[in-house]
Length: 328
Image (cartoon, rainbow, N blue to C red; front, top):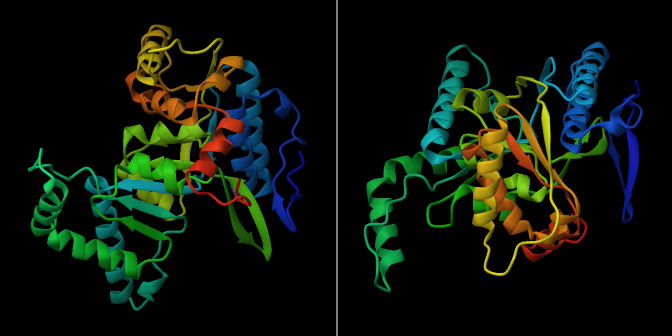
């Protein structure tokens, strides 16, 4: 086993990363399991745990079957407002308890980026007129003023928090257009370390970001809150189902048509609890947004995620949506 930090040259900077090539069998794993392998090498509390978890990922991947239990730590958490507001209520209650016990309440913060998008509670009362957006927003803020004041306080009070107000779009759109970066970095013992952008979210369609190569899936509010506070998610190493894509969509066939065919085929296959990973020459014929449409439909056939690779189409999309060239 070799989990030393290696160095990647990025322009005029040097960025560290945890290579998986030193692990026997890693080169034969599906890409999604290599993401899990890097995660356990980087996040395991000690070398023994890292070796144990890495062994479970590799043995399951080579066998093509579900494996043993590992501890997985996502890079960030995505919340929508219905399930997200209670998370901040809990954080506020923790701060109050810390104060009452004589501690420093400001130390209670999300340990990884925590993003909340207000979208699920938005109601369209007015339609079919030029003033529809303005009138709907007026009613939205009148109805939910107290809740939005609380969220404004949370954004200003907690670190590692971004809150998107109503009217900006749905959480999955904003996630793939703005929040998702493909690769994230952080300071670790004075070194800048690069690692995979991975997400868990309190919505089953968090899987949309798999369309641009960001491993992501939906979890319950308690799991999301625990992850935000630095507690890993305990999970079994999933079985990986490969979908080999060939050809291209015919004229007039939409991405949703393709997504519905995915659902029909994979329901018949039985992929509940599995990772689905797309590969083959047909992948390049799908745009990043078409892939995201297919990945968004993952809950309809019950697998954990439908992951597409990071390739030139992905990088084109990152440029299109304003990511800087160094990030690309």
